[in-house]
Image (cartoon, rainbow, N blue to C red; front, side, top):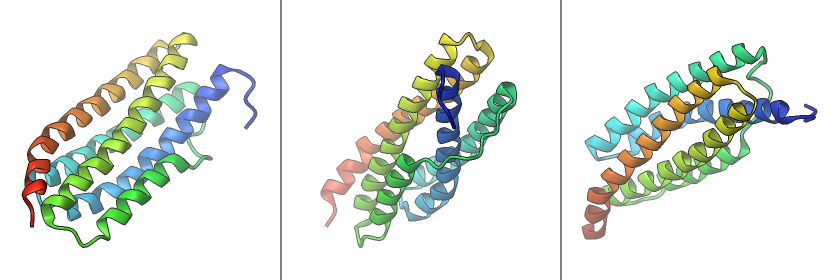
Length: 164
């Protein structure tokens, strides 16, 4: 894809996010299965539903832009999820695994917060108010998820410190 202007860059980065979100839908069930904390497990399950809603929102944006969401692989998300996968293959105490899963999940959230904030700014500069509103909903959800993970970490990290 040629990038001649900011709209081209916006579409390219939205495709990257679409790929990232789809990768996340495959990773979250595995993370929920690996979690021992009922609250963390539920958090991953809740986030899966939210991620599916975010994908639908991205599809709505692509329809608005008359573009296809396909055609790009998010290598950044692929790397973050691969690190999480490596963690899940470790022989760790349950509390330590949960602390590691939170860390992996927060890295994903921070990546998404940065990416959604950037594309929202591009859309705002391009005067795409409908797209901005949709992106702001997702950006708010990503920030809320990060805050929930931080809250869970306060308890789980203490339990991990006491493990074994």
